[in-house]
Amino acid sequence: MRIKRKILIFGVAAAIAAVAVVCLFSYFGGDSGIAIAGREITKEEYIHCMNGQKYETTVRLQQEYGVDSSDEKYWFEEIDGRALYRELADDTMGELKYIHAVYEIAAECGYVEDASYESMMERMEAENDKRREIIESGGVVYGLSKYTPELYMNYEMSSLEDMYCADETNEGMALTDEEVQQYYDSKEWVVGREAETADLDSVRTAVEEELKEKKYQELVEKRASQLEVTGNVERMYEFVRNSLGE
Image 1 (cartoon, rainbow, N blue to C red):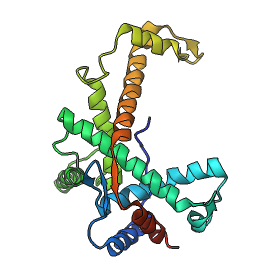
Image 2 (cartoon, one colour):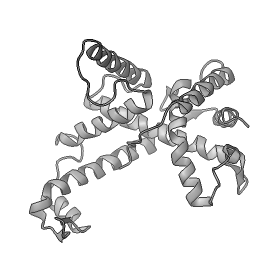
Image 3 (tube, rainbow, N blue to C red):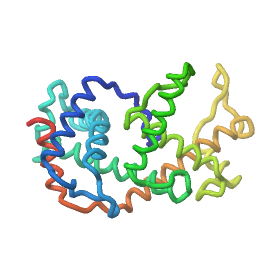
Image 4 (cartoon, rainbow, N blue to C red):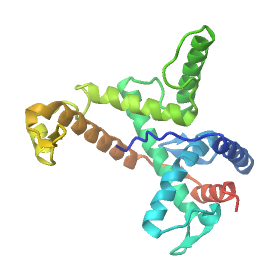
């Protein structure tokens, strides 16, 4: 699935993010200068996304180019005349477009009031306040006692996907028998310890759930591809280079 369910390790990472935010404010001064579909990307939003994107970009660069990531300076290496920090910047913008697509669709469905990053942060703060009050009153909370922006967004995006897929009135979620049969036929389905081939009736729920998830991902990817990025992209590249500490 495209929506990330990463568990991020904070501490040192949080300190790095704080330094990067200071750097971003210092470098841009006012607005970030980058917008997606006319909605400005705030400095905080960009840096949170970039820090969450670093690992995936690093893995991709290792797989595609055999990059040695043991030294953070690898971001300033060049492959085919292109500095790797630009790869991180591009991947970050791609991830931001995807995130915005998820929240735009959720807002259209009425799952959230506002598709903005600021609105997501308000919901996170409200959830953290609720959890803190429960703990202070001697109650028990399940999962984390406090969310970070990255973890809350991962949690919320996963929840938004589940809500969308559960509503058959949403685009693509009312499956036909033909669609289900075709998806079942497209791969092998097994059950039990002996991994016996399962007939459609015995795995129909799993087939339908997986097909809905696939169609949802395709819908989000399509919406993301249609979102226009405007602003001074070269300036954003420069920020990423500076924030990585060349």
